[in-house]
Length: 420
Image 1 (cartoon, one colour):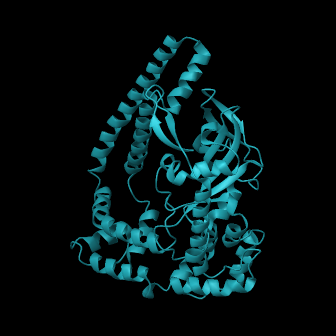
Image 2: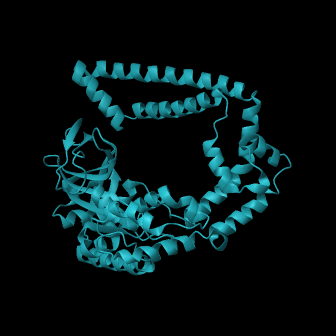
Image 3: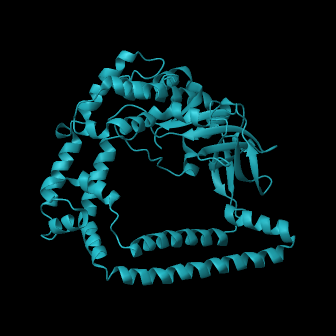
């Protein structure tokens, strides 16, 4: 049954209105989407030669294709660099001087990429600026905390209230204590805001900060223009797009996931962006059986379909053994608890038909490894020792199947949205 959400006026939670779902139709649609990923994406790129189902000989044409792409003068990045370079030369007359003073760069011998890197490495701002940025971050954190504390339906409010009730056992005392906590947070926020005003005044009288701000004002529109092109035509966007709570309803995708393992949505509580306990990382979607709060399903969302294997290994049965527990606010028990995740829990990967064409066809983890060794040389089209590079990277992937093979061999573990 497809479930259309409404808000419960008493609890603020979601109520689902039942509508019939044709699961056979959904599975047929999934098959069509899998074929689209295969034909329109996977088949358009050379194999890497790194995975156990790919011949090593594929490595050399793969690297050649990568180097051809990074021949900047022939590609969209090169066009963008030239356009932005011309725009830089039309900026106000004091721009070259500011560029030299602040970043020690000569406008005739640098481009927007050099400026982007120099800004990331810039460390000459006055100490007040660092304090100002830390203050700004703390103000944002405190404002979020206060909003959550006022919201009686938020997890933070419920968690603190439960802890207070466990300690005092009296609801009125708990409400009073909650008020004290909120008042203390507001005082803390006010102190940070007052300090921020003082720091702002100090910075506005510091010449190095004035120069920096003037440079940023000039260069920010051009940086944004470059970054949009760089992300769009380079390594594709990793943005997940819509809210996960909207994705929950999209294409009845979670209904189909539960259908594959023998459950209905009304039998499951879903939790989103749950952190592993005492170890880095998170689970995108976790499903607990309402009857006994037992974990029955995990789903990882990977906007790039080349990352489906990584998503499955990240939280599926082959995940690291230390990924054993999560901490969450149990909806059925109305309390925070540590939940053990079975090693063999059903795991799915949600991916999508991308809204933009892929320019580089390989998984994000490989991108990270390649960048360690090759980024500057690839972008300057310099010579690479292909064999050395293969010997360094191949051990990471040689025991893993390729995304193409995973799509073909484990279609039941993949769920495809038209968009994320």
